[in-house]
Image 1 (spheres, helix red, strand yellow):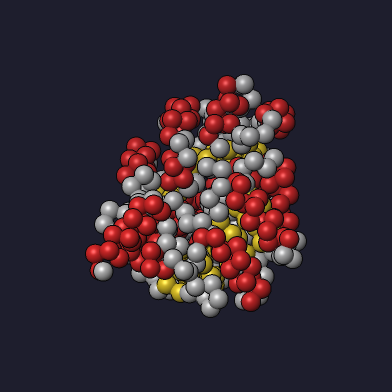
Image 2 (image 1 turned 90 degrees about the horizontal axis):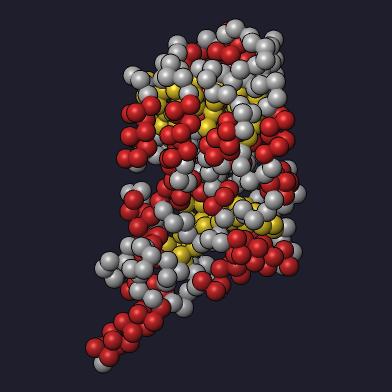
Length: 418
Ligand code: AMP
């Protein structure tokens, strides 16, 4: 079905076409007609499913049809969890709005940078505001923005908003909004806190659950490689060269590790660069756009880049350090295999992390084969097996046996066999 069948204006259909969207994705074909009717929406779809356009297109059509005001009033508010996602969503909305006769002003605001330019940017009002909740509240407090005319509220990645501790800010924002409005609610997962939020927010929502079918499921090959912790960088280097990975996103646990691993790769002739929250906003933006345009082959990052960031043609994601939760795992690997492409997600597991990875697999009803790469076989393999078999080693901090515990257990094992 083409975009023109969804009830969108020709200007929006044209803009979607220019972005290379030939036909709507499943979430778009379900969500757009419902949102155009004015219904509240509860969208549950995988990352990379095209959900930004699913809310942006009906939102823009609504703005186009409504009365124009001078100065502009904020009629649509999009709340997102991170600054990177804010910038990206803002960009998509602007691109989709480019042929509208009355082009709306789209303001993107987020914390971590000076508030003054954002206040200046809001002078004269903005029709659409894409914001992280904390900075939005700061701007309201500074009288830079009023939310009394909001007609459409979008919550994008609601699970992440709550994960990041935005519950209180969200509550305060909701109090500032007029009760009569359309709510478009998107989340990749629905833990209880997200369900409660959806129930309080939405009125008779149309639920858009895009089922996983081979046609829309990103084809991501998940590989798990056993390797000793201290040899991971070496193995990574080997894989990048041996398997000719052209572009890879490598996840590590700390900012220090991002710097360290990127530097080690770089010293060995691989164009790798770190990406983490200590970089200034300007530096982050630059690094991302350089990675997107192919100037860097490897981006070594903390979980900062695990959500929302859209990098087209990213063939490989590596979990150098494992993510803390199954949800984070899903988000990390969802960076690859976007928009129908295939992708590869590689996780390194060691003696210390095997039990934790099993928990991630269990939560996702997965059981992935373990591989070893010739020349990089772990010498701790036996310890890994006994760690995995040990009861109560669910990867919960403080409950896992320490290395010393494992050595003691191994010694006890040996002496009981002798
Ligand atoms: P999103 O889930 O909104 O982050 O979108 C994921 C990727 O899919 C982005 O690269 C979009 O540009 C792309 N995309 C969104 N809608 C379509 C469509 N209808 N056809 C092709 N690609 C799309």
